[in-house]
Image (cartoon, rainbow over the protein chains, first blue to last red):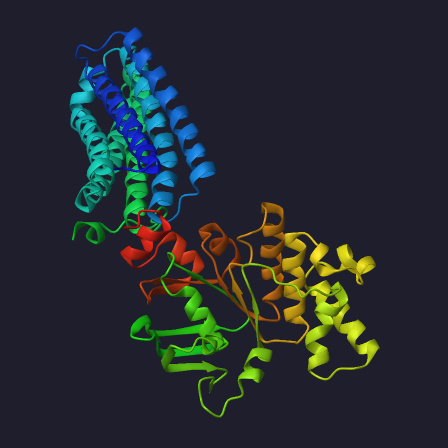
Length: 225
Length: 252
């Protein structure tokens, strides 16, 4: 029979899975909004955002109570430290997704720029990295952590290329300035989402190996073996 | 580990036929606190008692292997056990002051060791009580019976009594397990201060206490030393699964 403490840990794990899947859905909605596909109603998006905020607070409360009452050590301690970090990152992913939805709806004439700079592909990669991030928390597979790092590297590069392309376009075509500027903001948001996913993968790595790898220079081979 | 105070080589202990300690090898550093943890019956107290040959008092006990204190095997037949116990003091779970005055409790050891001068004894009593962080509480009642003190005060008095004979090593067997949280924290604080001068080995069932007070932790299970390492490592990333299971409360 699981101990009271193990039940508490399981509860915490389930809340993280829930908040993670809500944020993943928000990201999907944001990609749809960006690519002018039918998107959930504003009310629904807001409702999910509130749910994420509430779960984020709930995670803090559960962690605080475990720290105070159970004095966790070793892998339990790492799990709870990571849980706090991860929920914080997920909450930000949710916020960025909402921001993308709001912004995207108001960008007129974005279609040409999106096609020209292959932004749809970039957005799909962000969707993928978010899904992989949730999976890596659940399965704790090191190979998935490696894939997240590789994806993040690609996303950053492609976002930067797209931004440079849009800037060049704005220089020669003044009509593209307003939508181009807004698209750059959206691209930066997508890049941030990818960065938060990477932070989560780092937390999962810490959870498994008790080694802190944040701020380490990315070494593709290290995580792909 | 820089300075090794105690080197244990393949130490086994038998109670008659039963092997209670199995080939223990470890190094205990000088001027550090080493905590011995493990479930009841794992051999940690038995091991502690090996360090000052307390197990000699049990007739069925036999020991193999080496226990080198500063390079000298204390189980060598030429070694004087009285000298060992002078050098290696011990504090027990249940405080055990003599039914004498506070002063006499602390002066008892030095007196037996031949110190007669009242001035010298006064000095030792004061220094020892100060080191045990209890001088301010007791200085005006040195002639009162030690048995009238609270549990926490009695335990610190016993520590002062141990210090009075100037040991190098202090063994503590669950020194705070019968005390309230305030007395416990005083003992823990004391342990922290004493390690500057003494090598301390503490047996505790209280994992948080081991984590708070010690520099090194050794985990015993079924008479074996499973793992020893820096306390910070043992409580954050132990190498052995058994250690992880024990400290996280998932044992068995």
